[in-house]
Every structure is written in C-alpha cells, then in structure tokens.
Length: 155
Image (cartoon, rainbow, N blue to C red; front, side, top):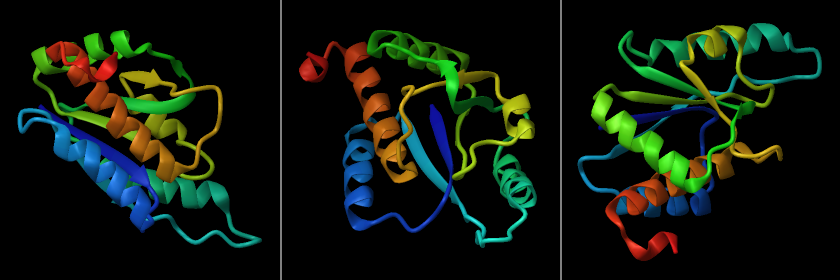
C-alpha cells in the first residue's frame, strides 16, 4: 500500500528529517509512506493569500490520481483513537487504493482540496507546526501498523 503525504512547505530542519525518516524506515515495504513536499510560495505583507493558496492547491491536486483516496488534515476532521486509526489503515490496505494525506500551508487547505477529500482527519484541536505534523503522521501510521501486527510498541 502506498500513502502519499502531500505537504505544503519544504526544507525540513535536520531534526524533522531525522525523526520522520526514523518512523518511515520502521514501516514494512508493503506499507510505503512517501513525503511529497509542495513549495510554499512567498508570503509578503501585501500578498494575495487566496491566490497563493490556490496556486499551492493546484500543485497539490496535481499529485493526486483520480483513483487515490484523499484524506484532508483539518481541525474539523474526525479525531481517531490509535485503535480506530489502525482499523482505518487496515481498511486502506484492503481497498488497495493509494492514500493521499493532505497537509495545507499556513492558511490551511482550499475548498478545492477539501472538496476532493474523501475524509477529514484531525490530529487535535491544537495547532501544530507543519514540520511537526509530518512527524506525527509518520509516527501514527507506524503505531497503527504495530497495533495491527500485535507488536508491543503501542502498549
């Protein structure tokens, strides 16, 4: 199964790369988590944020195939427990589609991205830095996999 983590923003600090990579390398080859970063367009004091978001959105949507199952990371999404997420990952595996997880830029996701989403997922009511979200997603996918395997990591 392939999971594409589509995230607006590039150039992760070394500590983020290291932590993200640590969880990705723990996953089996049958569960491929691939980060695809979308360049964050320059924000200035007088920038047209809606235009920048639309451009970033177009780039993000271009990475999504018609058959991909799309899950938008939003504060108003469903807040899974670890066990519920494990069941969701199991469902993704049986469906056989590529999963595309969308992380928006500083202003969030556009209505076009949200409309393309099959589901919405909330990590928390808190707001996290985008770099940290990449790590949290990788860790939670790894945790879900360990639950499905009966591995003691989750305990």
